[in-house]
Length: 438
Image 1 (tube, one colour):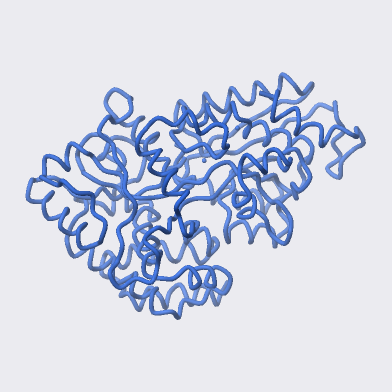
Image 2 (tube, rainbow, N blue to C red):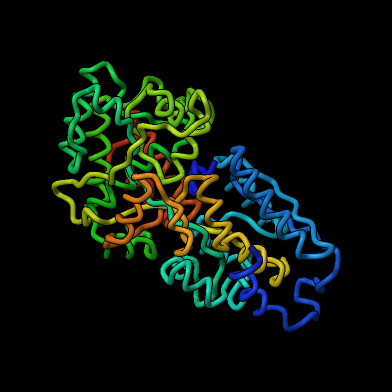
């Protein structure tokens, strides 16, 4: 998948971008701190969460292109199911057996890796060339920089929102896209009245359920509060408890698929993405990797022709701007012991105009590279690009912002909220205590 977080979703010839990028790092053949010397045999190990056929084909193409221009270098990839990636990666980093290159979600998770000295500073590498900075955007680089060090090469921004079946909306008599939570509740009522499951939810994986809390917090909390909390992990502002109450109120409408707590997010036709792909549910809250995941789960493995998207609705009492967006702002990092020159060149190649265009074709994820955006044809992708251009604020997913320990507690607390095992106040207490332990 270009799976969650990208996400699921899931998530760059050497000419042009690469030629300029390589010039930055071609001035010396002296050994690096890693011990690597240009021309030496080397295996560049890469971990991704690309598990769909199109994603695997895209990566293989990039790897072959890189090997063709780097004598004695072999790219060896391990593509790991998204829900398993973070745990395996953390174990590898802690044991000193990390891959050379790996998918980076950013936020607090990246800051924790930086504190543990597990990441390579990519500043000044080919991945940090002036041309790529211009084409990928200043904000993308800032999101992956800590204390002046570039700790990952940006690859994409994955704005989340509500994906829906236009055919099922029409069948239920819904003629207007919900712009407020009250209007969303009205749409849920109409869908239920038509015998249609309103919302697909893969609660088994926890994070899809937690997305509902994240987005309610985006609407309930101001930008200043959200950004302050990213650093302080102080959840005392009432907006965080209000967001939890919003989740409870939504669940009271019984909008989710039967057995949602045991439903996976993106694996198979019975997953939440599969329910949307097969018209068994009308909506799913996900990032912009959703079209690629859904495509792989339709009966003919073709894009869902009636797929649509709209931003998360506004909450009447919220202090957050209706134009604020949330989504993964990730890329790829290199482990601290990896060769900087090779890593930087590989990441630059992934982000070339050509490879960003083919990335969009493979994953359906909006190209970050400005010159690659003319390949976008789907209306929902154009909507998201417009929404990004108009956004007053773009937050990363909250579990990513808060780091592994607090984020994991938050995700589980949302599940407990949905099952009645905790209250909105209990959720805030749980993440506050986790922040204290952190």
